Length: 363
Ligand SMILES: [Mn+2]
Image 1 (cartoon, protein in one colour):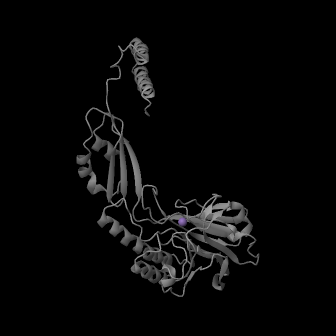
Image 2: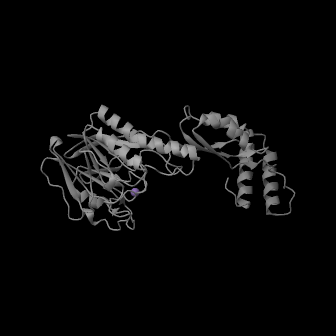
């Protein structure tokens, strides 16, 4: 049995374009420190093996310090590291991977053909391959390969695009994974964690990126950790990202916007990066600048968007000689006929939907 961490898609030295210059610099520094935190965690948990499934760098154009820090951090890990470079950090002898002096416990795949790393101490073999160019249009790397049934634990670490036949990033299929017969396939490329899935006797997963970098990477990010043995893989998601990206939609109809937002916010958002979208109907325009100042201290970064509509008297055009007028007159008649508050609320809602439909608006 071998205890592993499966992590990927660090995208170190990303630009963090949505943030200001100082915060972007700070975020790059934090993401470099992330690997050190990961190694501390792994040592504490007595992890044997770390499978890193590519896109560790965002591009080949990394700060030299980033590569050195990564090598230093991984060198402190008490177990073995196996890296399968991806499309963003493809292996090039003259590139980032080639320049870094790797510690002895780190193996980086350098070929786009499948190779094996044997770890006799845990009776385990790690199969894998690298991207050696920014694109790999065929997924043939796994063709014809089946892990031997020799009582050892067989693992695969690979960067590729599962289920997308036309992908330029090594298209893979679940059938291909099944045919490998490995006990666990650690995949990189997709930034959302899939949890552990199954193809025949092969367990596989995307662990997702370790830290969100934008509003297309929401919520908790982290890695997978657990044990693998012949025929069984038990891994769990470990939230590890330092900051989360979240999008919150707040209806401010009949409510003061600051109070409405406060009521919806979870506690402890100081480290997180939020986009808050205000929706609903208001009688006065939302004072976005004022709200931004009032809320700024509660987030690492906050982006406010005003999608509210001005409240109008829904019956205003009852007298129009048009389809709108007829529609309003008919509903007004029903409204006046009833004393029931709930029924009246439903009719008002029907008027809003009707008017929105006539204006081609979304409610
Ligand atoms: Mn990728």
